[in-house]
Image (tube, rainbow, N blue to C red; front, side, top):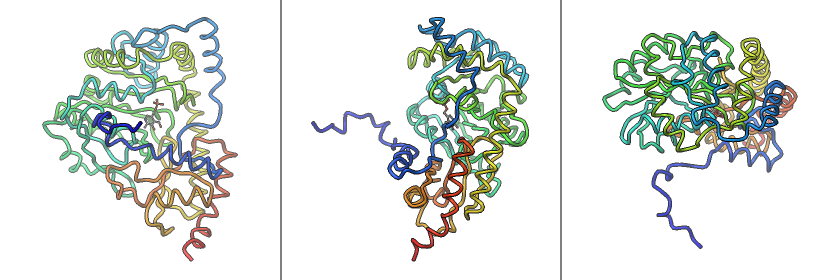
Length: 395
Ligand SMILES: Cc1ncc(COP(=O)(O)O)c(C=O)c1O
């Protein structure tokens, strides 16, 4: 039976299938190396796996408290105090969620009315557009410009207006690799205060950074009361399939967000919340090693890309490299990415997926380096062929 178009709500019309998944599929067809999708191919720390097994053996199998298992909220409160000096009440200010993905949607559903505007810096993580659409919000995009990928202050100031409800700030950033400086964050904070807007921050890569400290916007003057801080276990503990994330927000905001979260998911996986609580005690030495190991992988991939004729921008944080592909002479990024996976055997994500207007990403591709050195070395060998093969194709 044919499906009637009118069965689907209008809000789904703008949703396209994730290009990342398309690249993953093509990669499987061509037996390529998948540097498209951002999930690690190495094991999670033994401590977190053991803690999960203990929790299941202890029959922690039923719903946790909807806003989070007490052990995890306590562990998060002391983590935020230790690392950032943030005073977070575990009873009223923390909500644990099914990944930071759910955290972002539940937050926006709780704070945004249809017609409100949400400022988004671009290139952006591809969920933010649909997140805004689900809430009926209008995203207002502001580009990061130049080789340094910074925002123009006047342009950002102009994006704020009477309808602005929030700005989404993702630092360290996917896909650009930017870690916003204190100066940049202070400027954003001042705009939020001037326009009575909320900063919703996606800090999922907070422990994967190569320069300077991670600065949660909530720690800037006057921002604790108007910031929703989102993070999670996926990237820090290499457990993207566990779906454990969290939200730190002032009590009044948390109360609204918790209601949405309750009706949407009831709660995050109970035994895995216990495991993440245990893993948080690994603390600073673990985070330092995580960043160190990712720095080695970053340098390996960035070096290989440079030698292969790409123009990569070495990231300050997160585990992605955006590269310029202009010199290979392809009509656009999608054509290049499809050719690369089929002919060279390495999958990346066409840059246009990260922009509101595809033409802005026409000469870029994103690769991830959350892979073992062995796989990255193999990718490097294949990428070295790019220029020769591209030239043959052009003849
Ligand atoms: C910027 C950003 N936010 C959120 C997520 C999703 O995180 P989670 O697994 O916690 O839902 C990703 C995953 O790639 C990401 O890059």
